[in-house]
Image 1 (cartoon, rainbow, N blue to C red):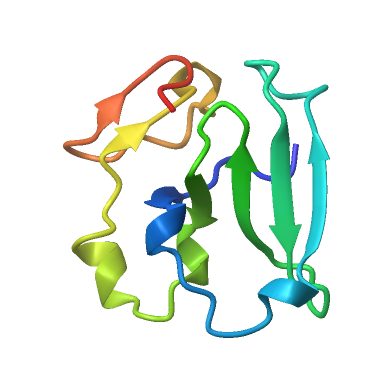
Image 2: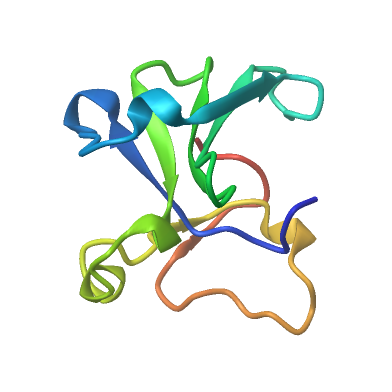
Length: 109
């Protein structure tokens, strides 16, 4: 496991615009550890190793981006504030859920 949790948002690929560097991303895909059995492809920055986004065969036409890839922090308090938490059954006891956010035991997306 790479992290206790990740803050993600889903974007339609038609709305995702790469300003530069898409052709240099390193991509890796697998299905062995994906609960749904779908293939998940990760796209990384080849310079710093940052996971830029993921794509799943279960959700064609959509990309799952990390909230930390946004340049505008104010979006995290507004438009990009989480609406759903998944896999809450795995949450550590010292970390509480976000106020006003749907809680789901397993995957929603």
